[in-house]
Length: 363
Image (tube, rainbow, N blue to C red; front, side):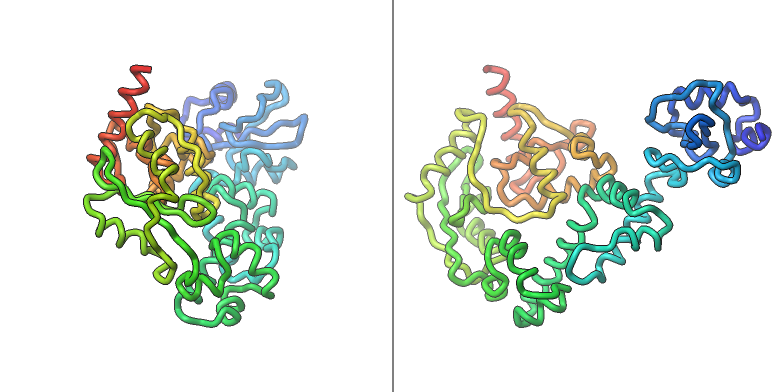
């Protein structure tokens, strides 16, 4: 058996004590090379399993999962030794997503999907959270809503779009749709006619700034060089909304944002009316936790939300932020000291960070 382990690890001088030392170190580079089995529990783990280490006399080693299971051990539910690396988990989640894309309304049968993929339903739930930051149900709801929006934009009736998207009844549609669209599906289909969006444009330390709001809160903040440019950006998703300028009504919120840009008001706490996926909101909330005058890398944000491999997705969530400054995506930078991207332009991002750092240092 040990000879098989040695061959599997490509380390001809490793004996059982050497394997034990690897297990004690929790070295992830050896995952998939051998497994650690515990006689007292009947469980086997990957070498890097984060669980507390058992007594040495209760431990034996096997070259692979099949050998351990043949000997009567069962896989650890914490480290999932059959999932040798995160890429396998990502592949399973991708397969599950394809199955969920075809799900009708209602809670998805995760147990059945898991059985089809050869994993337990609870295990699939955990893989979803680690890989995407959301549950399978949240994913299914987001996909249905996306299909609904696409159907409404294509001019289908609300009923047609509803059933095509997978909703079984109007009662199952309206509550989540109103929450996530900010209006009823019929209103969204028509380009948000009657929805009032007020805006104000003012001069700021970074050029021209537009702040827009609905009755629920701030829905957009844009930085630019001209009023025409900012006005075009505001039209965005709701071309038929009632959009008009209202400097007086927005003066209080605009004043707070201007004070923030000037370093007078380090913290902003304004009501928001922005739509985003569960993952995007996890990223946005993490950005709101970055202290004034500090920065975090995209990788650090990914780790903060429990998704260390989702660095690119974090960058996309930053780019989808329609209320910069309030949700401070400028405080997220690339590794190695690079600033990364910014909707208002790299120079504005640089100036924002320099102002905040100087104010924080002076304080």
